[in-house]
Image (cartoon, rainbow, N blue to C red; front, side):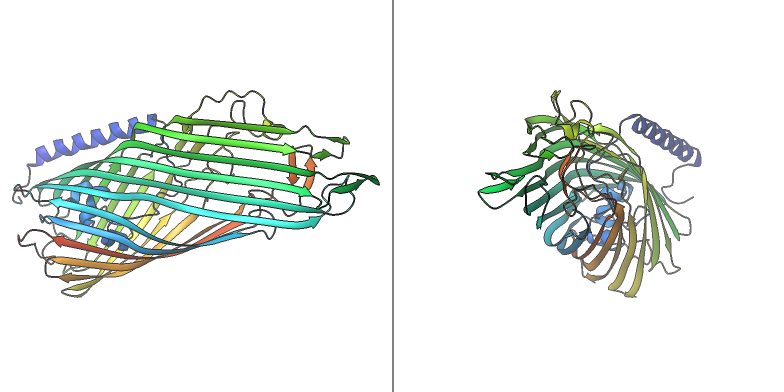
Length: 523
C-alpha cells in the first residue's frame, strides 16, 4: 500500500459519498431553470499555461488555474506562488454579410488590451492541504458596428419623382463577467485528491440596437397627382437599450486520480448553477412610425409612437450547470504528455432576465403579431445543451524549455437563428457562431520562475440566418406584416470571425522549499 493511502473500504465509502453528492447536485441542477447570458462558453481560458493547452487541464497540468478548472489540483506541487497572466493584445476582425440586405455588409477590426488572471497560492504547513485565491475574467465580449445606407429610389408612390432613402443601423454589446474566489484541495493519497472552490461573480451588460429608415424629397414642395403640396418625410424607427449589473455566487467541486504507474492522470469537476444575490437594470424601448402611406387602401397608416422605460428593475442572470472530465497520458520519461478535456453544459430554459412591470395593452401594429401581450419591454433568453472538447500537448525541448499546444471547440449554445425574438419575446441580439481555437507557445524556466508566452488563433462563422433588416429592396408599407420602409427579411446573412491573441504569463515561487522534479512527478 502506498504511503498515506487510505484503506480500501474507506476509500470505497468515500467514493460512494462523492458519487451520491454529485448525483444530488446534478438532479437539483436539472430541476432548476438553468440560464446564462452568453452563447459561447469556451471563448476564454485562464492562466497562460492552461490557455496554451486549450483548457485541456481538468485531468492535470492546470497549475495556478486549478481553482477554476479542477479545484482538486490546487497547489499540487506544494509551492506557494504568485501567478499573473495577461492577454497582451488581441487583434479581432469580424464581418457580417448581407446584414441589412443583399450587399449591405458590416465589418470591424478591434484591438484590445486586457488583463486576464491573477492568483496567489498560499503557503501551508500541512502538505496535504492546498489553498488559493484568484481573480479571473471568464467572459469578456465586446462588439459594435454601424451601417448607413443612402439611395435615390421611388419608394413613396404617391409622390412624383425619386425620394432620398436612408437606412441606419447601430449596434453595440459589451458583456463582462468577473470572478473573485477562494479554493481548497486535500491530498488523500499520492494518487487521489479532492477540492472545491467558491466565487463571487459580477456580471454587467451595456447593449443598444437602433434600426431607422426614412424617405423624403429634398424640396419644399412636391407633386402628388400633379398637384403641388408641401413636402413631408416618411419615418420608421426602433430603438432598444439595456444596461444591467448582477451579482451571484458560483461553486465548483473536483476530484483527481493518478494511475499506479503514473502514466495516466484522470480528473472530473462540476460547476453549480449560480446563486443570485442582487442585480439591477435600466431598460428603454422606443418605436415610431409617421407619414407612411398604404397604397392598397389609398390612406395613410396611423402614426404611431410608443416609448417605454423602467429604471432599477431586478435582474436574475444565471449560469448553467456543467460537468467536465479530463485525462492526461504521460510518456515513459514523464517529460511530455497529451491531454483531453470534455465539458457538458446543460440546456437553458426560456426565462426573463429582468423583472419589468410593463403592462402596455396596445402595441403598435408592427409588433402586435411579433410579440405577446405585455411583452414590449422584457427580454428573454434560452439556449440548448452543448458539449465542447479540448486537446493539449506538452513537448519537452531542454531541461528549461518546452512547448505547449492545443485545440478546442467553442460551439454556440444558441437555440435558434432568430436575431430578435424567442417565442414572441424580445431577446438581446448577439452573434451565434461556432468558434475554434488553436494555441501554441513556449515555457521558459528561470530559477524559481516560469515565463510563458504564446499565441492563439480563433476562427468561426455562421451561414443562412435572417437579415437584421432589409434596406436593399424597401417598400413603403407591407400590410401583411406591418413593416414600413423596409423589405422582406431573407435568410441569406452570414458571418465570419478571425482573431489573433498574444499571451504572457509569469509564475513566481514565493518560498524556497524545493520543488519536486517534473521527471518524478506528473506536471
